[in-house]
Length: 207
Image (cartoon, rainbow, N blue to C red; front, side, top):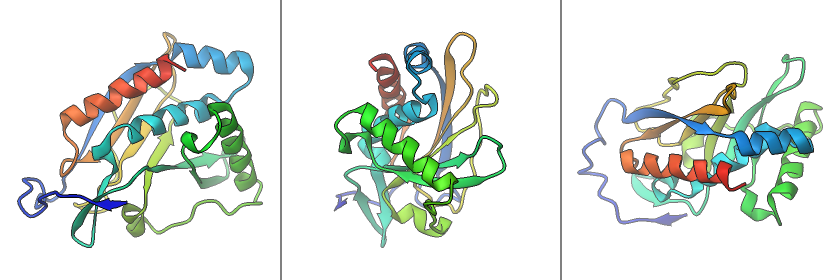
C-alpha cells in the first residue's frame, strides 16, 4: 500500500450521499467453459481467477480512503461466499492472487483445497466485520450460478464505501455470462470500467 497524490477535498463525488454505482456487461466464456468441463477443473474457481486478474489490472480499482488519505494497494485479494453441495452451509473464503503461484492450475488446486477445508469445518474461513473491509486489500466476488441476469444492485454500507463488488451469473446457452461490478465514483470512472471489462474478456479468451 502506498499513499497517492489525490485531491480528495475537491473531488466532485466526495460529498454525495453515496458515490457507489454499478455497471454490467456480457462476457464470452466459451473457451474456458469447455476446457473446465473437459479437464475436470472448477469453472467457478477459474472464472474467479480471471475476474481477480481483471480487477488487479486497473489501478483505480485498488484505491481506497484510509485516515482521510488516498492510498493504492499493490494488489487486491479475493473474498467470496461459498456453499456446500446441499446449499445449507454458507461460509466466506479469502484467496490469494493467482500471481503468487507457479501457474493457474496450482492456484486452482489451492482454492479448491481451501474451500473444502472451510466447508468441512477444518478452517474457519474469512471473518471480518463489514465496517473494516474497506480498509483491507480485498475485493468481494460473488457468483450467482442459478440464473442468467442482465444487471444487479449491491448493498451499500456507507456513502464512502470504496471496495469493489463483483458478481457473475449463469453461463447462457451461447456461452455468454453477465458480470457486474459496483465501484465508487470517487476513484473509478467509465474508462476504468471499460478497461476492466476489456481485460477480463482477454483473460477468458487467452486462457
